[in-house]
Amino acid sequence: MSKKKNSETIPQRGVAKVNKFVIAFSLIIVACFYGPMMIFQEGLQGLADDMYKLLTFSTDWFWQIAVVACIIFAIFLIFSKYGDIKLGGPDAEPEFTTFQWFALLFCGGSGAGLLYWGVLEPINYIAAPPFGLEPMSVEAAQFGEAYGIFHWGISSWATFVIPAVGFAYMAYVRRQPYLYPSYACRDVLGKKVTDGILGRIIDAIVIIGMVGGVGTTLATFLPMICDLGASYLGIPRTLATDLIFVAAFGCMFGYSCYRGLYSGLSKISDLNMYGIILMLLVLFVLGPTSFLLSQYADSLGVLFQNFIRMSLYTDPIGKSGFPQSWTVFYWAWWYAWAMYMGLFVARISKGRKIRTLVLNMLLTTTLGCSIYYMTFGGHTINLIMNKNINLPAMLESQGGVATITYVLNQMPLAKIVVPLLVIVMLISQVTAVDSVAFTMAQMCCDRIDDGQEPPKWTRILMAVTLVLCVFGLLLVGGQRIVQLSSIMTSFPVVFIEGIIAVSLLKWFKKDFQLPGAANLQKITHYDEKGIEVTTVADNSVEQQNVYQQDGALTSSRIPGKGAIVK
Image (tube, rainbow, N blue to C red):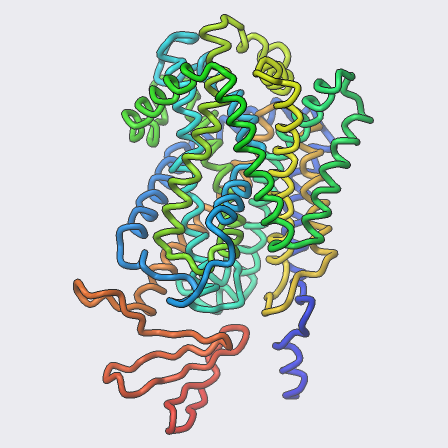
């Protein structure tokens, strides 16, 4: 009996054991949501529009307050003494250089969506501005770039902070091998709850949220990349050209999967950052530099002046639908990515202080996104307001992809910039999709011990699932179905993130002591074998609590006095 029990609790090295319930539950829910899209296709556009309005107008306050709460929690981590905690211990060294760390974080969290919306957002905001402003006015143009930076700035990245710090703390301070959302909720919901069916449902919900987030991104990315490529080559966009670009995406994705995080993703992210810097420099130097800088400075002023108003804007009287169509959509989209980014950032942040991690996520990435908007958003505003090109009418008649292609072709050295742009976007999405597929496959396993990886077939299954969901969104068509996908799949993630925040505070209180104004003192230690060593008050004895690999306490002992079996 004991041999059988041990063989069940300690998996073999190499390949982790798959949790069939998590896979089945998540795939069933995904099929129920995305399956009808493939069947009814364009016939669902009206229903999607009605459902989106119903959900956003009834929950707009919820999303706004949730994101503000994330900002407040992030500020607490920065200014509290817990920000001094070093992930991995005082002697831990970072596994990536600062540049590589930022490149992985920025590319994993932004991707090609930054370019897509960086062009389309200013057009939409000028044509249908917030706060009751007159369309196509100077005031509308002032908010055109400011609102884009707001949607890709501190507020959005703050939604990643709680899972990132939570999972990193679990991995490098508590040294737990269970990097799953359900395990992070254990200190709040209880072991019996999180180790049971509800815990598996929590993990499956997070997987479903990732599908919604990635589906939204790829549904905007793939048509744009195919249209840009065909336009650059001067050929009509056909199924054959689409397949060529998709095949190129698949080859880069395959390389990244094969090489893994350290030799694959890090190198690809480095290359991507160099490409982004080169592209932005060319557009900035050869473009309307003076206007871009002036518009950028003015936009920052508008953002700082109206930040609180924008953060809580729901327009319940005017019912313009602006915050529901844009801000609520963005917050849901970022929440859909939150758990993936938390797990991903945890994997690359060993050796960093919590304060450094949070500041990098909030400030450095926001700066990078704002420079994107300064370049692409500023160029778009210049075409509308100074060149008198009616981009809103083009967007209305020809759609977003054709409008983006036109705008990019108006940029200086378009013959050089456009192919560079295509390469940068491909690399960005390879970085993101590869990481998401691996993370989803990881959460489909019972646990991942040191030296183990999810079975390859689970990673392939998750990648195929993502692609099929994107097909469903593209078959329906229209922006509403893409936005609805984010809202519906990410709603439960907000509550899970709140539970992780409470768990993190409980861990801080248990593991560290804050004696007045003195430095932070660690009172609970965890070794690499899962042994919790807690220092007793008289500092003369150490009590060791030994845990099974499922987290259950098996025994406690005081060195030299034997073990007390629980």
